[in-house]
Image 1 (cartoon, helix red, strand yellow):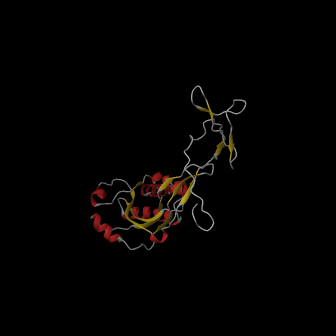
Image 2: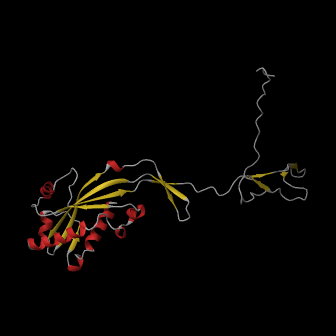
Image 3: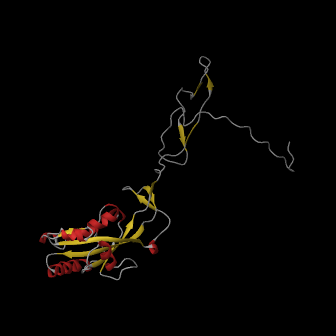
Length: 246
């Protein structure tokens, strides 16, 4: 799920015209060494915090259907997570960085969710809204200054972008639906004196056909039936009135 959010966010920024103007869009950590190697205008979206949203945790299981409307699997509810990105712009002059950052801000605040056309993999399969919030009050977590300190760089202008995305639950394959019912077949047990084997015949010598119970469209299992003869256990003794055994 995380990599799918990465690509959707990157695709959203690319649609703003940044790539068309020669600006690179990357997901790298903006460390001091990384910044020193930059030789082209760049927008960096660095994922630095992942937290579950416990208020959206569900229970039970949902059903997954195929194209014909049959249940093919059962899936536990998705778990929701908040992914927080530090978005920065890198150029040779602060004015150019601010212009890039302004373009990014205008793109992100224009939507409140990642567009469906950019969702892939499990995000597209679930069909749930992946919300997006830019430059808002973030949850408890590392501040921008803490992130810059951990990266070993100097504090600079940045945007905090938070995405709430579902992680698909575990799926278990469901058994196929029952399409055939029970068939009962009457059998005539006659001793074949020559071979000592039981054979099933009607008066005309043909096998006895099966009889359907409750279900329509059940195929005939043939003369051998679904199972061989079973040994019968003796019936339990019947009680007489008054509770005494015979």
